[in-house]
Image (cartoon, rainbow, N blue to C red):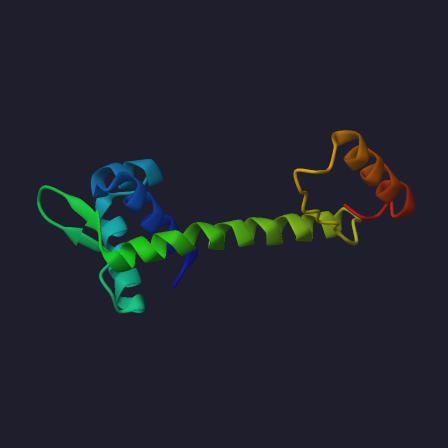
Length: 121
């Protein structure tokens, strides 16, 4: 499975039309169809039900669609982490907030973190 397969899958799943998906990806329809076929062969399932009039996601395709955007999110996070490390950042602080925290308290907390650990993103 290659990233191009996943990009092709997302385009077809969004458009539910191979020609429009190919146009969106700036490729011909034939390579797009081939990429989807390769992905389906790799997964061992049909992702789309195709007729001459329509394209629809199968149940497996819908389940796959739930996962693929997270793959690209993880890749974007990895890219960001690598770029931050190259720029000199060493660590990253992640916060989960509840409705009970007020903006002034959050601002004070972030300022304190920045003061104590300036290298933390």
